[in-house]
Picture (cartoon, rainbow over the protein chains, first blue to last red):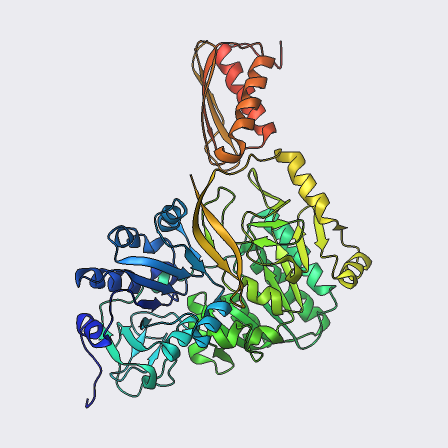
Length: 468
Length: 89
């Protein structure tokens, strides 16, 4: 067609005017199946680029080839929501000379919108695109559903390259990324393996501890005072979180209560409740499985939302500000209710901030669900290894040994006690954990800063030091 | 004393291999070594001393076991290695 933007990857990079030292960006909607980051950075290395800053919405196990690109000086800086696997391990041991900047999803959206995180060239994988760059997460070869984390990049980056494995006839409608924001379109064999978006089919957990935690979390919600017709909810994808939805569903049916919307990463579980008429609308920043990705394409009441509209702290119109209840997980919670979801108890980065900070801060009721111990690793501790979500935005901590309520929310503690739930002091939980496992020796941290944890407002919350 | 094994490599367990040695030699690999290696070795040592074993080589591969599990696995491995049934005798 006239004005086609379709070019080779190499030509798209040349056209972008990318220079050494500049910032390139990527989204993580294909999660463990992503092929775009490795493909593009390999090409940039081949073309001789150096000193690039990589701004990803998140990185995972599949991105371990970045280790070589860091060693060769192609990538010298990273910002992301999370890091996992060998790349995370190498960075924890001091691979990168600059610290990695960790931001929440809402924090990244805000930072891009405000120009604090300036993106020179965005490389955005899409499951379909037309020759002008109208792009979506729904195609013949791959499907990732929502492109919510890519939308701030598409809108604010100086130059946008869309990569797709399904070039379709113009106009590709309705589109997630608009042709108006796109400079080049590159057709590749594969942008991602959709089967790796969710780690296997989502099943109901059979782990008895998860089921116990889920039942307790559901009871907390039902008796919190926020379980009313028209309430809104967000959950994670952990076994206990998903199982909690099952028990909440039963109670919604029993009492004739319906939710107005569910937010966040959307799973098949939420789609099911929506299709049963129990949840009015789905607001989807990230589709966590194929069912959710299909639903966003087919159902007008299942809507895509950008990271900014989802969870920006700076934009009062963001959806988290309308959220009543969120169920979240944790690696560690401390006696001040601070939460760590990023750095393992061995001092190695092994997670992601995700929307944790954002939803905990803005929701009316934030519930952390975690076991007291994972093996010998305590989850309720005197002080978190790394501060990710400040305790003032955490309301309730559910463990199998009891439920702790933030002293700032006495009305919730009272409602739960009146409902016969076992409400305990969080210090008692930490003491119980210590009585079983003993007191851990301090971790062998070095003195090099390998990570900086940003709060969603752009301030620094904590530093992560290298582990020896 | 002959070589004997107790435990598994499952998460939350510890695999103990006991064989002949001079003094108590403990080679530990643990998923929680930095924080709990010292305590795990202390529990293994106490358990063996409690059974009157002063010379043994112990290979311990730990996957985050609690102290009670460590004691049970060390005791079982020691019984198998020495043939002395501490529960019966």
